[in-house]
Amino acid sequence: MTDITADRQTSRRNPAAPGGARTVASAVPAALVARLAKGVTATGEPDWVHTTAPLTGDRLASLPRSTPADVEKAYELARRAQRSWAALPVGRRAAVLLRFHDLLLKRQDEVLDLIQAETGKTRLHAFEEIMAATLGARHYGRRAPSYLRDRRRGGALPVLTHTVESRRPKGVVGLISPWNYPLELSISDALPAFAAGNAVVNKPDTQTALTALWARELLIEAGLPADLWQIVIGDGPVIGPAVVEHADYVSFTGSTRTGRQVAQQAAGRLVGASLELGGKNPMLVLADADLDKAAEGAVRACFSSAGQLCISIERLYVHRSVADEFLARFTARTSALRLGGGLAYGGDMGSLVSAQQLETVTRHVEEAVKAGAKVLAGGQARPELGPLFFEPTILDGVTPEMEICGQETFGPVVSVYRFDTEDEAVAAANSTSYGLNSSVWTTDHRRGRAIAARLRTGTVNVNEAYGAAYGSIAAPMGGMGDSGLGRRHGSEGILRFTEGQTVSTQRLLPIGPSMGLDDEKFAALFTTGLKALKALRFK
Image (cartoon, rainbow, N blue to C red; front, side, top):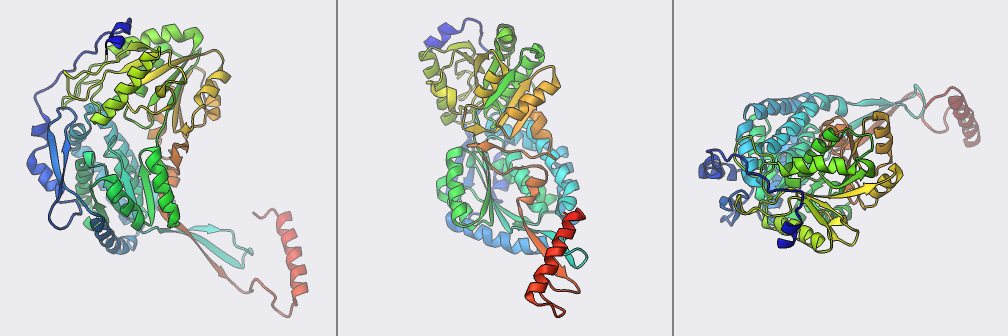
């Protein structure tokens, strides 16, 4: 990448982080893999699928591959377990989540090792998954009984009609979860589904299946019936359709392209689905922003988990009056990030997860530079650190014809753009079919909230990268446009796994002619009553 190297006028090579004495091989021994593999629903003679550790390129695990017939078997087991689980009081179901919360905090080091080994991210970024998973477990462990309780509703006729809205579980939820946040993006949907009385058949990405299998073990230890959470492993095009085919509801997190296929298949069966898909997320630095805080926030926004986060920032819009000063601070912080994948705290950014991700990042950067973009920081692979490391990269001068301008990179690369007015910044931020997350930086909180209201994204963070909105677990999280359908978190995050049922009991008089009234007199009486109800402000 000689063109990029020559263009790195204001950057230097990112330093390596301390490695530490522990290795992936020692942290994820064969005995642990064999134990977790027993949680896969796969029958018959094993057909093994193999995974690789991104940090080293070495073999990580061999796991049994599930077939479409195994998926069908998983649904049979899950349905059988779901009937008795749904019959339990919601408080007993929710108590399992609270016990899981405590166990996860107590034994977090075990799963931090697995997350790092399977994804290549730093330990701090892996810990974000612990934070998110425990927030979800506590929230639904405490709030599920309130979300799911029967609610008295206004009846057709005051006093005479007694109406109750109840929530009934869907049955068995088909959950397809991705590789980038393997603990959080399985647990965040599974926990409210369980609390609502459902079973789950989960297809995690094969690369990160060990983390999901470990979480299943821990939830069983917390009191979840073993058959209630079935895990199947295999290639998405092979067993993914089978997961959707048998589900009573589908929860999918992944690419927009695959999400469209999932939605079409679910719609064909008249089955509901929630989809969290891709993003090309913007960050706006206004003229009055605290530039040090904004630069520090931009580092988190763009390079957490090596940019392999659906809600990370890939487009950075800076007011022209502060652009040079902001970029000097942001570039210096980015160039100082320590790269490495030691199984201990200390690294600032880890590895990409696969050769495919590395190829996409490399292609986007090389094509942009060839077309005239300038590298302010990073821009190179770092094979001496590991096979899939790529430096955190800032590009200036990106133009609309470049692929990186509109297509999701899903890596540690951000493009910088300057604006003169806030209207211009909002229009540019909204100039994409995606609408997942955005970030606004200003010292005027009222202005920040006003800008946020104009952005077409499901979550907006003012003076934070993504954690403020995502961590506000009582509020909905999801995308607009090509970024998906439905919401996780809050009431929507659990009610999507239920069917609303209305039970109305009529007392004394029917809703129809009675007591000697003919049709005309009944209609006249009802007309008078409807007018009276409006005058009395009945809702």
